Structures are given as C-alpha cells and as structure tokens.
Length: 318
View 1 (cartoon, helix red, strand yellow):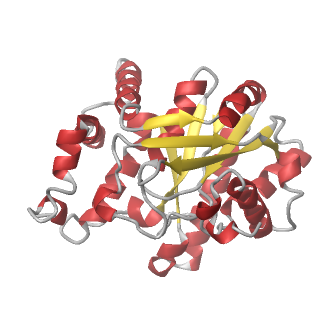
View 2 (cartoon, rainbow, N blue to C red):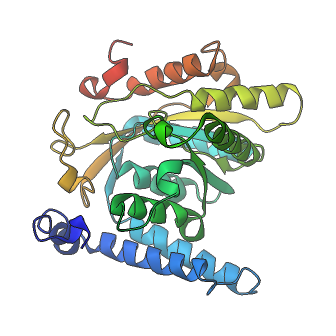
C-alpha cells in the first residue's frame, strides 16, 4: 500500500482533503481519468470532437482548481493588472515567483487564467525531468504522482510542459542529457513568447523551499532572457517581452518560516496573498547582469522586495 494511504498518515492527508475541502479530491480524480483516456487512446486527436471535449475538460479543471485556495490580491497587484493586460495585448510575459510548496503551482496559473484568459494564447512552463520520467509505483510512489500531474498538465489544463534537469536531480542525468533538456526548454519557451499572448511562468529557485524562504536562483531564467534578446537583435522576434515578479505570501500560520509541515503541504482552503510588481521590459532585464546567473539573481532581488522580510531568504540583504 502506498504510504499516503496508510492509517498513520490518514488524518493528516485523506481526512483533510475529503472533509475540509472536497475540490482537491475531485480535481485529482478528474485529472487522472482524463490522463488515462488520453494515454490509452480513448481520446483520438483525429476525432473531430476532440478539441471540444478538451476545451470543456480544461474549463472544468480550472473551475475546480480555482476553488482550492483563497487568493487575495494586494493593492499593488490590482494597480499593475491593467499594465499586464496591455503587455499581453501587445506581447508576451514571463511571470516568475517564489516556490515554497504545492499551492503556488496552482495559484499563479489560476490567477493568470482568471484575470487574463481573453489575452493568453499559449501557456508553457518548465517541469522537473526527474519527476516527469517517473518510475514504477512500487519503486517511488511520490515520483509517480508528481509525474502523472505533470503529464496531465497539457491535456487537462493546456499547459505545455518542458522537462528540465533541476539542480536536485543532476545525479540522475548526464551532462549531455541535461543540456538537451535545457535547449528544448529555451527554444520551446522562445516559440511561445515569440507571439502576442504567450506566457511562460518560471520559479527561478527550481524546487520547493525547505524553510518557506526565497531560495538562490538557478540560471535558467537568465539564460532565457539572453536568448530572447539575441533573437530580437537578429530580427527573429518582433514581439515585446516582459518579465513579471509575482510574490506569493501565505497567511499567518500557513507554511510558517523554519517550520514546514509536509503533512499539510496542500494547505487546501487557506488564504494566500498575491503581490505583483510592475512588468519589466526584456531590454531592462538583460542589463541587470553579464550572464544568466547574474540576471537571475537580479530578478530575484526585485521579487524579494515584494515579500515580507522574513521570507526573503537568500536575498534578504538585497
């Protein structure tokens, strides 16, 4: 039996999901049914009705997910929403956020689709190759669940996934495989961002924060900025691109700093504040640093200013 179904863990997960917030249970059931149909060929891409069913399933999935968490927009966010709407009318955006746990993977896409669905044409995101290439259930059940969620992102939510080698999974892959995955992410993201309405959300820290604080950035977001700028100079991209800092702030008692509680990492039904900064033009982003890592660190410092002092972590001192 998978560990999360054992009686020892039941009160902390199963009862929390079923009794406190039924939407999460419905979400996962719906998600895996759709995924199973797609993987077994029950939904054929050649079927003329497939796109209508896919559109309906995605609408239902976003509706369910939108009820998982209570999202409060700060005055700064409300002020900058109109700026972001204008950015999506003319070009594409790269929202980047702190990555403290499971909820932020849903909070940001739900916010974007709720507020800007009329302007978003394509949505893509990096994913962990370690989880995406999941093993058999008996060998690693957590990896299997993560992998299924990631593989269902496109058929269920319309999110195009780009599996990359995260810093915590480097021991599982060779240098060549890591570079191939990075190139696919960079060029796949570039294709999405090259047209108005493209959105590629990125958590620069890469993995869940172990203590609720902001982690040191990986260079991927900086490498993407440099590639986009190079393509613009060559005339291959005409679309304006902005980078948008999104700070997710849990309410008091939710994922407290230094006291993470894995048993309640879903935090279903809790309140989260979303503090969005002004969109930063690509031209200003590449001037932040000389290489990908310096650019990534500079972007994270901007994000840190939107977070409470105790959650700024690696960027607490500016």
